Length: 342
Image (cartoon, rainbow, N blue to C red; front, side, top):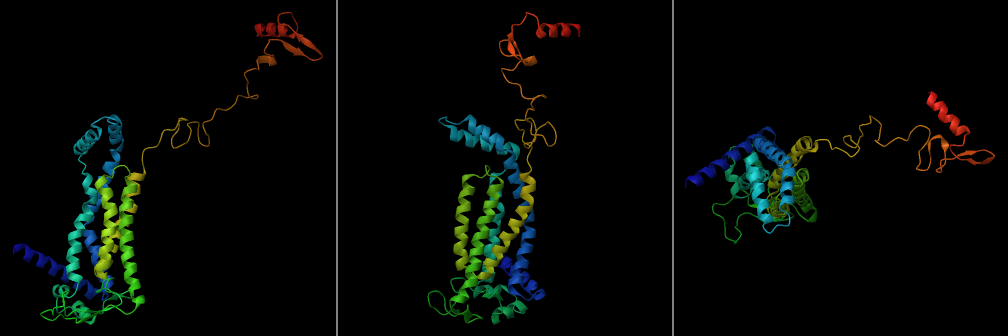
């Protein structure tokens, strides 16, 4: 009983906040977007904690790879790697599951907002004397050509709200007897675009996290990355378009936050020591140098060339005659005498 009262209090409070925003800006779609931004501001500390956890996991990757190399090929290697990795996380105060925490904590908000935005029951959480309540009754809730009270499954139809899914009359009668979701195939296009945007942004946001920490993603997070877009695809088709707008906006805010924070935190790593002795591919020889050995002045030195231009036999060629053996006088002997004097 207490839990039911608490849930109803939360739903009524959420409806009052949405009605207040709509009073300031009388556009149903824009009001949902502003409410989304306000919720994201409240969840900002969790988002920062998520990114810090990703940084910590990335910093531990060299040690984790060392553990994998240490236990590779051993019978109980996989178990040992898991145990040592968790021990390493505990020593450094890293929670590998915190990367999924912001998304999981948004699910209760998503469910609560679903209860407020859906018809016919959701309208009871909106204050009756508010302009938003009157706009919902008039169905003045269009945004980018779509009635945000409808779902993609209801698009292009006139949906009867006086009966439940079993065909029984709803008592008391709802404030809206027929939900106007457009007519024809063209009316479905905005709803399908919203659903695809919801799927695409959910997938991209998860992939963005994986690219930032490629080695720190555990199998549970990989599975979540594959399953969540599909799950949200189903929700994007069945849930009211206003709820799809909320989740897509949430994803876009998260993508922007990660875009500006992750490269600064994870993209700037320590410079790599290259084989040439420099950093980042530059040689220690100085700016503009490549680190290659420069040939000595006077041309390249080969294995057969000797000092003074002698041939491998030690004889010096003389123009116009055969080579004179060493030690029998001539210019070679004179050169040696001059070098002694010097």
